[in-house]
Image 1: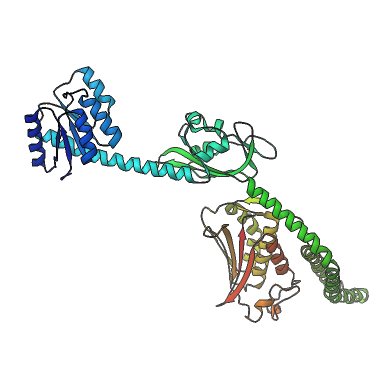
Image 2 (image 1 turned 90 degrees about the horizontal axis):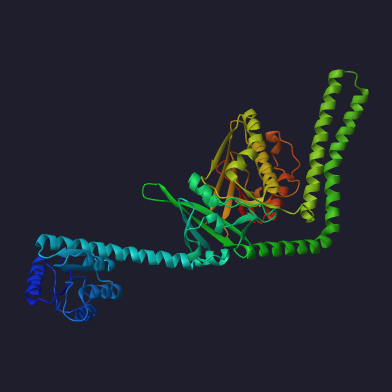
Length: 504
């Protein structure tokens, strides 16, 4: 490291001058020479050298070892001892000061230069490492989440102040203890113990999330609802060296959810009284409109059965009546569901942690045979490592079934259906986005009416598909209950329904 500034501390003038000459020849700068420990400390403060070459035996009350210790601790300047003494007592005293080198006189020039270069590089790396550690410590201490790190044996190596506050353990007393002793968790409803996620992380090497309704039992017995995730710590060879656990107190979030739920319930109660009569009138009007025609058809079929003497003909009318009954039963059930949704008497949603990569194939599976029978194709695109979605599984399943059913009905033979899911973490709160596309286009003039009750496309009979026209309105109402959004667009021969859902 040419041009490095070196302070020489030597009380023998001739030796000091010789050192200065050699160092200048190597390309180093020696602005001053000190002859005592006290002077060395003052000159180190004055010129801030990059390195100090220190003789151990100096004149005065302070020897080189004491001076080196103060210089390194006060100014973080590395020291190399140059001495003629190698006795065990001197070496022991020198080791305590953590010198960067220890050269015995006489020494070779190359040996001196090599020690200086290694010391300068080593000290620069140490300073960089200390700076990075300070930055990391400051970052971990400033974040609002609790952080606990462990080694491969599940023993705690670090806790930030938030983790100390939540667990009731100080870092000094927690370090070296098993993480399960400090991070004591259980189910909030049953109080059954829950396995420490650090254990599974170290076993499987994967990110692990806590189940819902997890509580942290602090050192003083206090119970705090939390959520968290644990991840492995790996070295540059991808070997697991420990685990880090990040967790947060969700008491306020739970209170906010409960308060919001109460607010929604109160609003629903108020609006329910205002709209009850209107809903009843609408319901009766819709029922009379949709049931009158099928009932008339069934009455005609009964009359035909009464006069028919042909078994095949009678069987045909019975099959038609059976189909009509199924349609009317579906219509009545849909009408009742829609009426409950509009009157705010639908069952209260209960959020679950849905692991979409496992749950969605289960929802889609019943449609696979139907798609094959219609010679259609289904493409499923799931973004890898989708996080859990906190939503009502029953409502979300009904929504997806209605949308998939709609896509199957109106996709022509040999047509294609694309089911895609991705996670958008750029918004607050993050969103899960589900799209269902099918190769059939809806005229732009009809799109604004697509969610109207009993609305069917004017040329729906081209596909020879029945339906009550209530599936999409029900899906829209359920999406609103889940505080999400549903949109539809149609162009270039494709129709796409986009479902955007936040965590509840």
